[in-house]
Structures are given as C-alpha cells and as structure tokens.
Image (cartoon, rainbow, N blue to C red; front, top):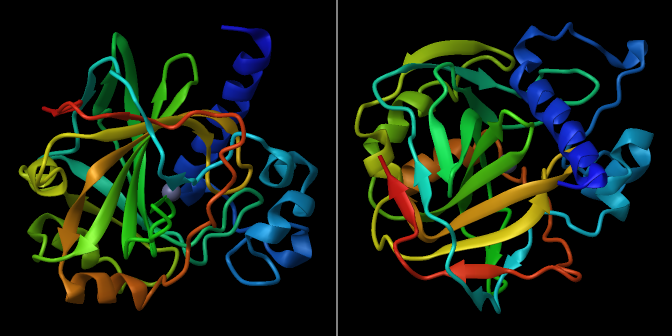
Length: 276
Ligand SMILES: [Zn+2]
C-alpha cells in the first residue's frame, strides 16, 4: 500500500472512531466554537468543504460518495462475506442533538459492540456501526430509493469498507421494529437493545445476485476517501408505515451524488455477498 493511501486511510479511521464515539463526547456548543454540519441550506453538503479546513475533501475530493449506480463494468469480486448482528445487544443512538466538532449528524446509529465481521477475499473488517439515510444516498440509473442503510466496517490497518443496502417500500420488516421503537426517543438518547437473531435474513432478502463496488468516501464530514463501497443490487423492504416513521424524524439526511471522475463502478452479478 502506498504512503498516500495509508495516510488517507488513517484519516478515515479517525473519522469513523469519532462517529462511533459520539455518545462519549462532551457537549460542545456554538459558543465553544464547534463546527456544525447538517443538511439544510446554511449547513448542508454544499458548505461542508469550506466549514473546516479538515473537511476540504468534501469540496475538492475526486473519489467521493455517494454516486449514481449506472453503467457498471461487470467484474468478479473476491468473495464478500457478511456477518451481521444477531441475537446480540447493540447500542442505539439517536444522533440528532448530539453535538461535537466532527459529528452532529442526523440519523439513528447502531453501534456494534461485538465485532461482527465483513470479509473481502482474505481481508477481515469489523462492524463498527450502522445507520440510515432517507432518501437513499446512492441512486440507481438516476433514481432514489426511499431509504438506505450503511454498515460501516474497519480493518485492523484502519481501512474502511461500507455495505450499502437500498430500501424500497413493501412488506413490513419485523427485524427493524426494535430499532424503530427508539425513533421516538429524545434526541441524543441512547438505548441498549437486542438485535433479533434473524436480522441478517430480514435485511438481505430477495435476489441474492449482484453487488456494486467502487472506491469512495465517507458521505459525511470529513468526507475521507479510501473507503471500499459494496452496495447490494437487490433492495430490502420496509413497510410504508416503517418508512414514514423514519422520515417523520429524518427526512433528508442524504448527501447528493458525486461525480464518478476517473473511477470505475463495478458490478459482480454472481451471488457475491454471502451472509453468515
Ligand atoms: Zn451513511
């Protein structure tokens, strides 16, 4: 791995640890000079790059996420294996109102405590957290889905990989329900819940073939690059009521799609993602 890439990965690693540790941060406020980002005109994606010198990639980066998933080049990825939380206790954090210099994002974030894993070929990443966006951040042929889940993983060397799962309206997803009960919690509140054992089966539903892959970035400040993205082609389903329950709280926490530039978007059409 070259030095430049290693450096970028280290920056990304710090960013993820910040995301994961926001529940422990002190409550910084405007009068303490914290930089606040969000999704409104005055603090939204168009302004992130100029808010903080450490977030310059949000404006200048050439390998940014999300992107439009279209015109993919067919490829064969090394095997991708996912082990999602099941039957384990996780920490649910309502991020609205959580304020620190790096992160006052707006989402429901689930911090993994037990190190579920993602394997890509022979490389292993540990699940750090997962969270939700509405509408989807990635688009497919220019179209948004109602929501998208991101499973953020980190390897021992600091490298980041994110699994994206698009969400369409359909059947009720019972595995999401324990998480949704936290939507009504006070902002900044956290709760420990148990993920249902069948969680992975209820998220990775439908046609098992097809995963998009490209090199991108975090979709929130500091927009660190060097992130390996894997977005499953088949969406999972939440009911209209479940989607409405989320969008009643967070209805536009998505960064717009970014230019592909000189990158290649790949699509592996085999059943590339193994759930275990
Ligand atoms: Zn995300």
